[in-house]
Length: 91
Image 1 (cartoon, rainbow, N blue to C red):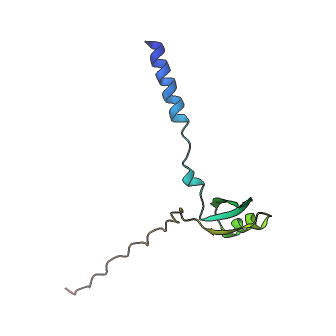
Image 2 (cartoon, one colour; image 1 turned 30 degrees about the horizontal axis):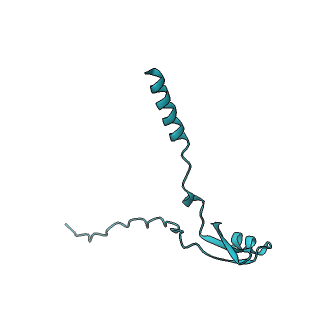
């Protein structure tokens, strides 16, 4: 019985510690579409800026840069709340 409990605990530990982050974290807002030869292209969408993407494209890989259609965008912080102005009355 102890061996079974130890085996289940070991499997649970390996499963929980083996979790890797999602691939969505590796994607950026820019994609480099490069020619890989023989009429096929590859899309690499991990660039954080247009300049980084452009460097990949002009470094000998023929292709172009475009915006990543799967990029959810940068989340803008909400505007600070403004206080409601009350009309002062004289007493």
